[in-house]
Length: 170
Image 1 (tube, one colour):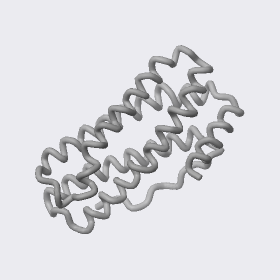
Image 2: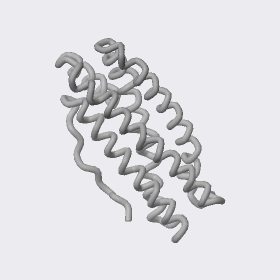
Image 3: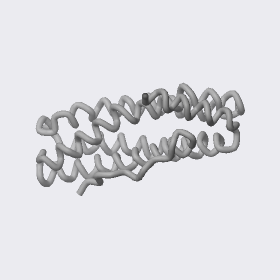
């Protein structure tokens, strides 16, 4: 029912590719969350559900915040430096990061205690909101940020970005 392994990610030598790969893992985890809501409604909080919830919880409490830091601390400032016209799009993406963090806070406690979910329908609605926010954000970010980054960033920028991303995970 749930996907267990994600494809290998690019290396830190390809930081834009790494950010795109992270987007794919986010989408995979959103699919898992949506499948989890159906599973909970049909079979309850069994071992399979607990395993899926644990994996999703781990991803969105560790990897996703690092991804946002990669963008906000290292990528977005470089893009603003190279093209001031991207400022509004970047500000919108930063605002979306805050909105998604709030949506995560609405589902995170339930993932830690599936048996404590009193209203599966309400949980499913919160999950749907969270996943919809991320899906829209990824489209916007890839269009308004990652595509321009591929054109604007120099080899030195990309090297520094990859090094910062690697250091953040050390």
